[in-house]
Length: 214
Image (cartoon, rainbow, N blue to C red; front, side):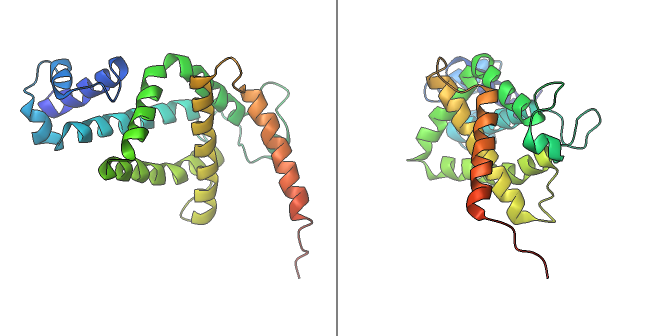
């Protein structure tokens, strides 16, 4: 393993053990098998750029894990069926509810990483390069979530894919923050599902009947 890979591994370890704000260049170098501190700037440009890359890569790995098996993959029921849209399956929670349960579980098992991501977001307010990196990662993730969770192809319907992905990102962010701050009163996966069903019904009622096709 070269210095670049060692630094990435070391940065991920530091995010878990020390957090985003408290990690120094020397911390990363020490965690990277005592790599020379100067290799951070050589390979990544700055400590912040390396930490951002490590955090975003970790978050992508986390996101893939909590989302579970993509729609259409063997062994998973399609989430676009009428039954899964309206109610949980009788043999257990629907796929989206299982995903929220995994997110809730990760608030304990992956807490250091989730806290580090929150620290990075606060840094983004005064660091345009951090904000740009996070924003670019968000934009990549939106259509990926729509495709993975609902089988919506961004090439066929980019507006719908972006809208659906954005809603899921808002739910994930809000759910993780509530469980990090107030686990005693944060919503369960079934609470989220129940709330969304009510909201969906209200939206349908407010929209009124669909106009008949000519």
